[in-house]
Image (cartoon, rainbow, N blue to C red; front, side, top):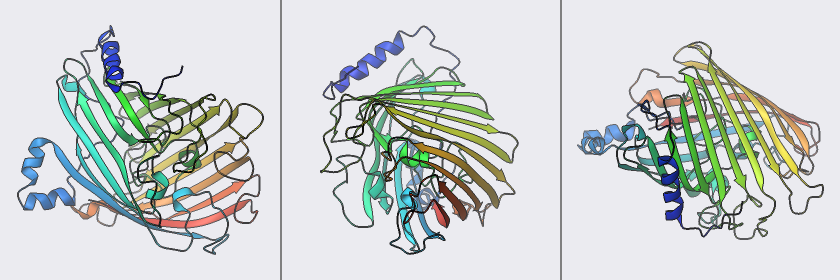
Length: 425
């Protein structure tokens, strides 16, 4: 199915409306939003500061929130500590033996509630500054910058809740929907609790999922257990420029049978090559469509213990320059989080990732199997303080291994120590 990028966005929106109105099962039980995005559940430093000067009351009345976070970290590669040693494949955490300002994020947001079945309009604006920005640029926005620390307009979208239907329409640019982990400092992953996260990212997150998507997305809340999303985007990490000039299909199904169990399935379908951003890219490939499938399952076993699984599979009908026809990559990761007390939470991840596309997804010199085991602890020194409860330290130790010599100068393994300081405000 080929959909020209120049298709009228208005017609796309109207098509969504007609489709949803025609649905026979407009459930009257949609009394709450099973939103995949975690809500803001605290009033941070910024809103408290605005409250002291008399501005927060007006913003709260209008439903507008201003918040953000700052994150800085450090990584030491025990196997190859030299700053200019070979590749680590750790993505955002790839700078050895040097303190890094990962990012400072500032958000302004007004959320809408489709369950009210009345017209409402909302938005979200998020900009970031730091080392991570250089890796999350979308094609056409911020991608001509140079230097270690850069700016990025990470999210810019408008939400419109519809009358009579438990549904909203989103237009703009947002962080990808797939994956167990989340780019926003990795603090709002599938577990939802900022305590339950690791500083480093999985191979799946780095190499089998898009960073951002730009387009139109419709969300329909059938009932408190089922939420459906469908839409069109410019493709992986594309925005004002698109290397393929074709639209992707994007869909998501979220099933939450209870407050302890959740399952989320995401699919993207469309031409993606190339996925990098910048002005000197190879021509886009419109013939070989990719199918990317993502499944996340979480289970809260007890009040202290949560378990989760993330699965990613990407199939490309073909990659220009690679022989052999269809190419695949993806992996499986298991997560466990155990809260010792309000101060300490243990977090772990075990992962297998396979790049059978001759190193295409990871950038390695060859296809390989990657394995990693990460153990970390999230430390909240002041869990009961109104402001400082959002201060967190996350040290971790990580062991990576591959069946090919891809690390440093042909090593098959690496051991890294890393950690960050994170403050949500």
